[in-house]
Image (cartoon, rainbow, N blue to C red; front, side, top):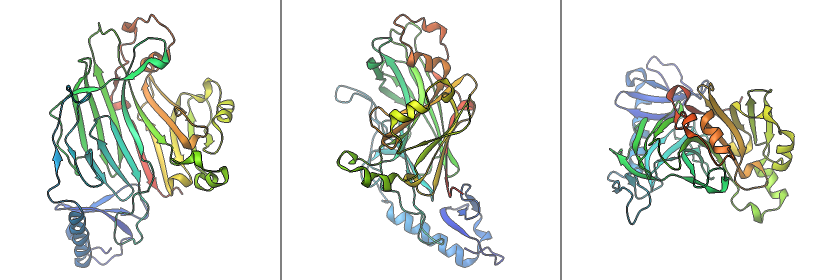
Length: 366
C-alpha cells in the first residue's frame, strides 16, 4: 500500500466503504485504521476498489433470507431473520475481518468466533478462516426445576423477539429484546467490530416466578479435536502443542494451565479459593495460531468471573468455560439450598454495560 504522498504503508486490507479504506497496520495489528480515499495513491485506491468488488462478488447479491418466527406449536424457540445459504447459513449478524470472523446465530443467544490465518500477501486478502470448531460467547438465562439440584438446570428459551433485527454484515451494535418462555423480558447487547467484541444484558421477571432466572455470559473454548477418542496421545500432542490458558486470579498471581495437562491434575494443582474468581483470562499457543485471545470483564466489582472445565473431557483442550455474572447469580447457580429467599438476590439478572464482558483477539503474540 502507498499513501498519496508516496510513503509505503505495511498493512492488510480489512474493508472499504464510501468514506474510506480500513487497513490493519503491520506495526499495530490490533487496531484497524480507516483512511480516506484521498489519502491513498491512485494505485492503492484501485487495489482497494478491486478487493471491495471481489468481496461483493463472493457475497450473493440477492441472498435468500428466512423471516423472523416466534415460538409456537412447531417451534420451541423464536428464531431471528437469517441467511439460508452459503457459509453464513443460519446466522443473522456477521462481521468478517482480517483477524477473525464473528457471527450471531439466529437462536439469538450464541455468537461464534472463527480465528483467521494471515493472508498470504500483505497487499490483499482477508486471510483464511481456521478450519476448526469456533469459539463462542453465550447469553445464559438459567433456572433450576429442582432448586439445589444441579442436574435440574435448564436454559430458558426465547419466546419472542421485539423488532427482530434484519440480517446484516455491517452492523456493529446489535440489541436483541423480547420475552422468554416464562414471559420474563430480556435485552442482550453486543458490540462486534474490528477493534473487539463486548457483551452485556439483563433479564426482568415477575418477583413471584416459581423458578427464578439467573443470568450469566459465558465464553467457551470448545473441543477443537472432534475425533480425539479415535486418536493416540502421540497424535494429539503435536496438534495441541503449547496451547494454554493463562488466568489472573483475584487472590493469587498469574498462572498457566497447559491444555495437555489432565483436568484431574489441573484441579489438584489449582484447588482452593485463591484460583477463582479471576480478573482476566488469555488463550495462547498452537491451537490458536499466532493469536492471543484476551477475555476480560470491564469491571469486577460485585461480579464473579471464573474459569472451569467443560462438561466432559479429560484434557482442557476438550473444553474450557469462562463465566461472567454478578455475585448473586453465581451464588444461585452453585447453591445447594432447596429453600432460597430469592428476594435477597436482586442483581441475579443483570450484567450492566460498565461491567460487560470484553473479548479482544490480537494476531501476533509478541
